[in-house]
Every structure is written in structure tokens, then in C-alpha cells.
Length: 302
Image 1 (cartoon, rainbow, N blue to C red):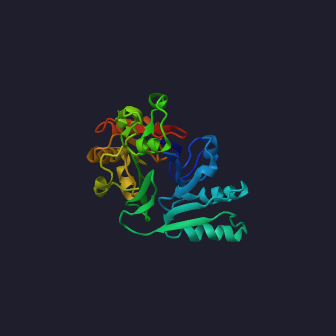
Image 2: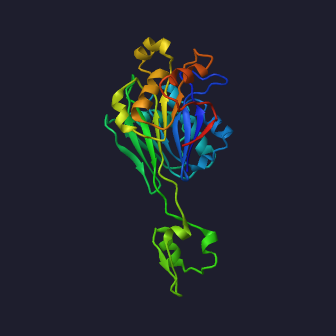
Image 3: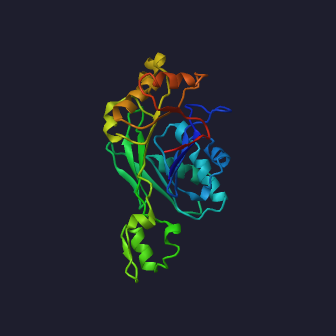
């Protein structure tokens, strides 16, 4: 299972009902926080997320609307009695920023806090276990920026409890089934694996791309992903501002989605100058049909 909850999807300054960028991604039991704009921990509470399950935080770049909520969240983890390690992945400099704040506040964490600083302009693996891998997606912005590609892995086959309930299987036979093997019982009966197990979910891919100028070099890295989040700070009528600030328009996000052959496109990082987000989806749908709008606290299945 891969499920994405939007905690905030607006740019620049937070407003009463417009929260800056942050997302919560659940991948087969792992809970990842992607960016951490101001007020993220309040949104986490509203989403009823369990703070203790967050072990990895990925920061795309060091602009305030993407990480000013990080020091507060780290401090709250301490006040809540956290003991589990926390891993923070982000641009070089993020360790200095956070540790200086902790030092001056004399508020060091009581749990292991690990920083993984990034500076490479090439895609690299950040995290991998038996359920998911996370790699960087180099983006083009005014400061060093990465997107992130999350890829789930195929799990072991699940036992069909209804099919095996009368077979009195031994423990080793359950393991054989989970590993995809067929089995033979003591009485000589043989069973194909697919007759006693359930097909696991196919691997899923989620690509997070914010903030970035339009650049086609991104396309090979995100081909055929199940869900692409691509920033759409501006509408095409303000394409000059997008170019100046190294952001993208909704139309440009749709061009990337179409060229990469992605299944679905999720827009976000809206400029607060716009009052009607429907304009974004209407613009993008002129060239790509499967477009959705990010909304605070809305959840999407990948």
C-alpha cells in the first residue's frame, strides 16, 4: 500500500487556510515526511498521524516554506519522550541550521538525530529496505534542490487463510508458500502456490518534484510513475514570473507528465495570488487528462 496525505500545498507564506508545503507518505508500513513547512506538526495532528512512526524526513531545499517547521517538530518529538532515531535528509547546511537552534536553546534531543546532507547533482539512493527505496531527483531552482522518487517493493505472497484452514500445514510449508513455492502434503496431495496464496500488490512509484523550473531532463527519471506531484506555482499567464523565480506553471507540469507517460498528475505549491485553484486543473487538462489538485489534508492512493 502507498498512500499520500497532503499536509500543506501552498507556497511562500502560510495563511489561515493555506498551509505551506509538507506531505506524509505511507509505504507498506513505513511513514515518510516530505518537506516540513511552518505549521507542519499542527497538520500532522489534524491528520491523526502517529508522530512516533515518522523515522525519515526528506527536505527538498532550504527555502522557508519547505523546512521552517522542522525545528519545531524535532523539539516536539523531544517533549513527547521520543527515543527512536530520526533521520533527516536535506541539502548541505541543514545540520548547521538545526544544531545551532538546538544549541542556543539548550534543547538537545534525547533521541539519536542523524543528518544526511546532500550536495550531488546526480540522482542517488538515500534509503532502502525490503519494502521501499528512495532516490533523489535533481531539480532546477534558485538554490540546490532535490525531488524524491519513492518505489515500493513486491512483498511476500500472503496466505489465503480460507484455502489452507483444513490442510494442517507445518510452519515450514507456510514459509514455502510465502516464498512463492508450491507444496506437497504428507498424504501426497500437491498444491500450486497460487491456489493457496493471494497475489501481492504490484510495486508503486511516487515522484515528488518541488520546487523546480520546467526542465525536460527530469523526464527519464520519472517515466511511467503511478503518481507525479509537480509544482505549479503559477498559471501560464504568469509564465514570466515562473521563469524569473525558477518555478513552473500548471501547463508546464502537464507537459512533463505527458512526456513522461505518468499515470496521474498532482498539482500543488500554488501562489497565494490565485483565489480559484480550478484554473490550475483547467489549464493542465488542455494537454493531460489525469490531473488532480492538492488540497490540505486530502489523501490520495498511489
